[in-house]
Image (cartoon, rainbow over all chains, first blue to last red; front, top):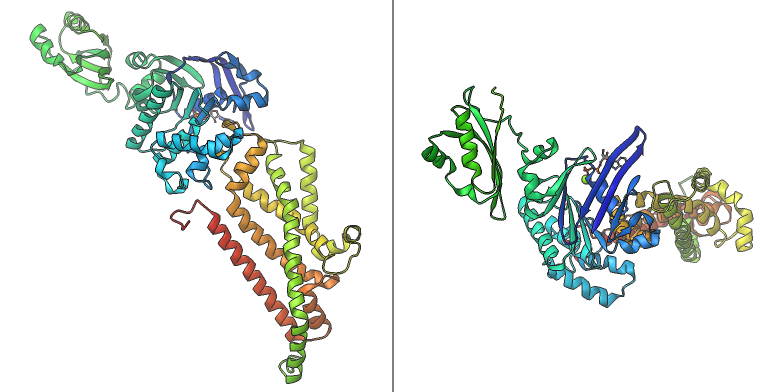
Length: 338
Length: 237
Ligand SMILES: Nc1ncnc2c1ncn2[C@@H]1O[C@H](COP(=O)(O)OP(=O)(O)O)[C@@H](O)[C@H]1O
Ligand SMILES: [Mg+2]
């Protein structure tokens, strides 16, 4: 369990102070894959660096399994960092050492001797699918392979927590998926708590159970991924869920039409011919003005904006009709016609 | 004055000097250079490390005033011309070696002149190390000392070798200069025969040998640096 309480971090720079984090509180359950998402400059890296005390909080505390990390001595903290390991956007492998040596690095720091460390390292290279690259140097590997080596290295000390700071941001989509799969597998197999820092919604969607949205150094929303995606409340969340812009790209029809936002919150209904049935059962004609839905573990999440012509009664009927389906919510919204 | 350089008498005379004196002089120049470089690295490497890790924001900050003193000493030593430095360190040379003349004695001023230079070279090499690697090591629980000898030095090793090569060739040049005031080796021969006795052929030969030595040091150093650098893809192992 990682408990972050009222964390504030200010940097003193030449041009004054920068408040990178403001009163951030989060609790990350054991075994979770917890996403922290936000735009560039939101404070994500600062937050993750506070979790292993690479950055000392200005105010507030970080507790891991009940231990306040801020109260530890330098030596205790170094020992703790074998339990809380990290992978990075730039992989950060030692370029002059081969893969095996890179994976052995954390063990070497602990003073583990050659043969034993090597055995453990080979096991881990095997887990990440790179047993055959033990003798290769990082420069000879692709980005995805380098990140696998970095993951193996992060696992050698059998950590409880794995922090991933934009770990897939330098990778192409296919490689990103394979690395995310690997992280998911490691989480499931070893029960390691994973904290995923990213600016990409797709990353959170594909592996996280919980998510916190960071904006301007503050947590503006947090909860289960499906919940946050279905009801993005804050502007920051909406920007992330609808990166193309929510209402601006609408294909809006005549003035006087009504608009209904249909929210899929884990419904199985995405495949059903909803609009056709609305016409047949209720005699209401609806157009899709905008749609952004995503399938997550077999369920649909996202938003559809329907435009219907008709009176207020038709709007109420439509909403009532749609919301009988489990996992669907609907509300009338005002859309400006341009 | 060059007309009789290649006369049979002067050739014979030159050959006699070369035969009797050059092997020893070459050896003296070689070992003085290598020893002086080794000592300069022995002092300059830790000092260069200190300049990087000890500064504010470094991995092991030390008090500001100590850094200022170290920087000042390095800058002073680097700005004194070598010949003058040699004379200035006579007392130190006498203290360590027992005399101020001779080949061995010339090692002391060479080291004093070279270690600040080496410290600066090491400093610039270590500053090139990717700061993300240092952050990685810190997040992995490395001590400052472990970061220095397991990350900073190994990661900059190829460029350290290149820079030590620069140092050894520079020290070779200085060692030749030390021939003017008591040092041995090829520099002494070049000055004694060329400057004082007008035996230009001997002087040229001494200079050519110095050039060849520089070439050898440089190409061995460059090869070594390239060979150790694992960032280069597709290299032969
Ligand atoms: N060491 C630092 N000194 C000064 N300002 C910093 C430092 N680290 C981060 N910041 C500032 O804090 C803010 C958040 O940065 P960061 O945590 O890196 O954001 P993110 O990872 O979300 O892109 C930015 O405005 C950044 O300029
Ligand atoms: Mg960042």
